[in-house]
Length: 88
Image 1 (cartoon, rainbow, N blue to C red):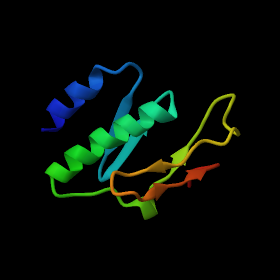
Image 2: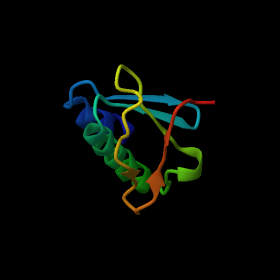
Image 3: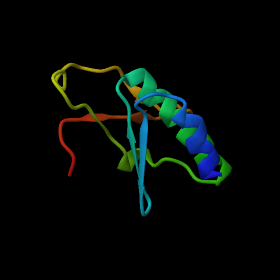
Image 4: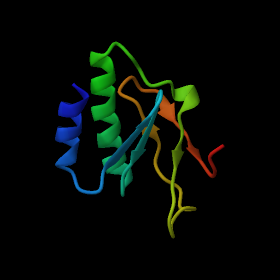
């Protein structure tokens, strides 16, 4: 099923998914595209009877506008994923 999901996401330009062990890294050029990618990820995780743990999740903005405030990212269940200035 993951292959099918990646094929659907592949239609979007510049969206990237990196999977490592039990971690998922979503990369997108805009907040809107990040939310779209998050929704697709949530759909697939629901199918696998899994969910995103918002307590272990964060959004990080990089590039020349890294310090510009972004709107809140929420999961499909309404939980917020907070923005951070650095990753640990």
